[in-house]
Amino acid sequence: MNRNILNLQQLIAQAARGDHAAFAEVYERTHEHLFGIALRMLGQRQAAEDVLQEAYVSVWKNAAGYRPQVDGQEIQPITWLIAIVRNKALDALRARTRRKEQAWPEAGGHEGEPAQNASVHDAAPSAVQLFEQALQALHIAGCMAALDGGFRQSLALAYYQGLSHTEVAAQMKAPLGTVKAWIRRGLDKLRDCLAAQGVAP
Amino acid sequence: MRYTDTHLLDKLAASYVLGTLAGGARRRFERLQRDRGDVRDIVARWEERLAGLAGPVPAQQPSAGLWRAIEARTRPAPSMAPQPASESWLRPAGFGLGGLVVGAIAASALFLALPGLFISSDQLAMRSGEKLPQSYVGVLTDAQGNGRLLVSSLRHGRTLTLKVLGPAPIAPLAEEQRLVLWALPAQGPAFAIGTVPATGTAVSLLPDTSEKLLLQVNRLVVTRETGPIPAAPGADVVLSGSCAKLW
Image (cartoon, rainbow over all chains, first blue to last red; front, side, top):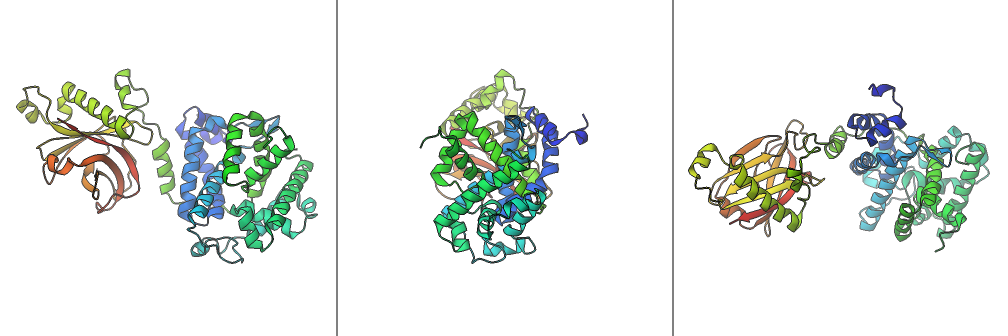
């Protein structure tokens, strides 16, 4: 079978049947995007590679667990892959926090980056810039503009850098309760704006 | 907590997917997902919503070693998959006491059935008395619990026989990389006892008798090392198992 003409969903289905070459093609098509996400969250290449390794092994073992549809709503294969990578990265971040190995720097252009790895993202856009770009691409920038900057920044820090409520509050120098409310209401608004665009209504 | 409230479930799912649901609450919510399809559906919808945010994150190139590591952990070993029933004893040969007992029994059986696997024809001829030789043996398994390497040495011998089970290589090796067998004594530092072939059988000379070297050793591991054999095993452990004494 010519795997070049298969889409990601078909490749994952093939991998679920034990086709390792199809799994290799899934890796080939997705690993740079997923590594970018993991690296953005963890700030360290080795930690991000460890997370990606665990994530792809999990993909291979659980390829049959991908559901293309939920309640008639299409779930993109890349969505499933991103969720696996982010969950592994979040586990690694929380374990790192527990070990207290990382000293988080003061707020700046690279919020929450471990200082010794700042070079990884010297030229990278900030979490807030990424968030604004994503809202534009999803055609919900206007809808989300109803929220002020604190809402968007808190969501951006949590999503792109995997920061906890406490870490977002420290980063933004805002009270914990306020940050929790920002994120809660920000998520509600995001859902409503996306639903208006037909995404997971 | 009431998990029948759909509004609460939606809120928890959103926090879970974003990552702000932490600690014990995160673990409890993961268990809830495993048990309930409706909760998995709510989570999947939030994953679809938030996945769009990842679009602008710049792609990055990981090292070439990443795929090799993933491949080593996922590529099915063709020879191991359709194992006949007579070899199914290899599967439970994991770690700890079970692995030790199974390894000892398995190696004893192989000693009796196919002594040529362990010793040369000359040695075999010298031992035509058919008595079980006193020796040290180990069965090492990979991360999936498949037996991949038999290690054996006569008690007073100075040679170590390594037999890779199945035709597939134990692990992919880049240039400059090698597989090193380490002995882990109950007390004291690990020491290297030989280089492991990727496939087939190899015999290596020991610096002393196996009795002196292996008496206190109860664990064996194989690591993938780059360059010369280091003083201590690296973190890239590809096989592991118990070392048993056959008296």
